[in-house]
Image (tube, rainbow, N blue to C red; front, side, top):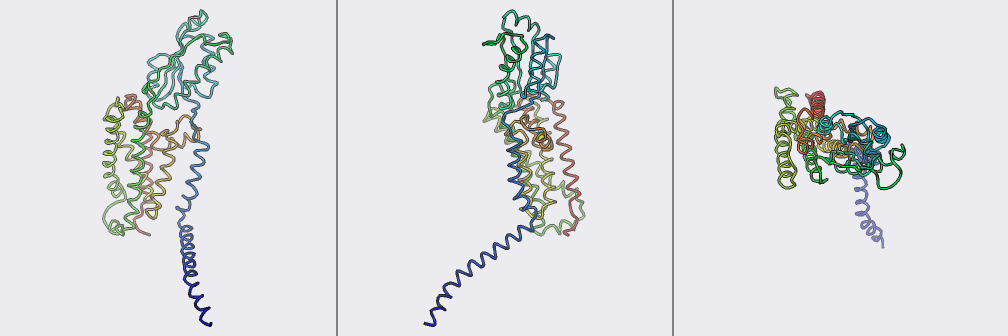
Length: 386
């Protein structure tokens, strides 16, 4: 009878020990998580950033699309149409070209996404009942951005002219709208997505490759040998970045070749310009990834930083959602991301045949981003392990 409590205790002891050890391990992980400030910050920031971006910045209905208006005549009807375009939330008049050639240059350079042309003698033909045409030219490299705006244009112009009593109320409209969707007339999503995938895949792989470079050396214990060598931080950075420039160039070549051969994406521009600017984009992402590697204390933190940087690149660059549909503050953030500028470059060269002169702004932005990242990386690089 005296041995029964001991038997029960022996049966309860393993279960109690199991939960006690599990609880101790649980507390240890919480303590480590609290000490790892970067990981703890990522736990909070990633869902917060996603919520804010999807809630405030992402809008599939583009607004304030940059538009050029070519008025071939200065009449009451022309001024009514111009005022209607200014008052709508779809279009934002940013340019008033004088010739069709100037309008074409604005579209090719990406300065405007739409062009509206009011032909000469439009008002006279309208009052005669000849049903004159308003020409609408759209940059269709982003079918989502152009489609909804084109659909709203006819109703917008008719309402404006009826309001100004330029035409009587009624249906159908006494004029017609002729639309030209340039660079992607059929609205094929492959022509928009495949060039964008070049930049997206390069961003993801280049960031990860270099973000792990310095932290890997530290965790493997080879950083001591590297620091003992007569080599400067700039030489270490270039030595780690240049091999991956070649890797990224090979990746870009494969993706573009597949896009051309399998998906029928055209390459209308200069291949040398595309190769040069792609190399600049790759170097910019590698520099940013290397900066992360000098900040992170281990490979996990470097990976978390890469994901945190990759997320706004995907959402705010114009790859998935129309860039013009975002609020101004989100567009400012997007302008500070390399992928935003590279998407404009690769789509313009492949689909529009744009020259370097049309892309100097985005090329300069990539160079500045690369230079800033390199300066920060060199400044952060520690010559000792302390």
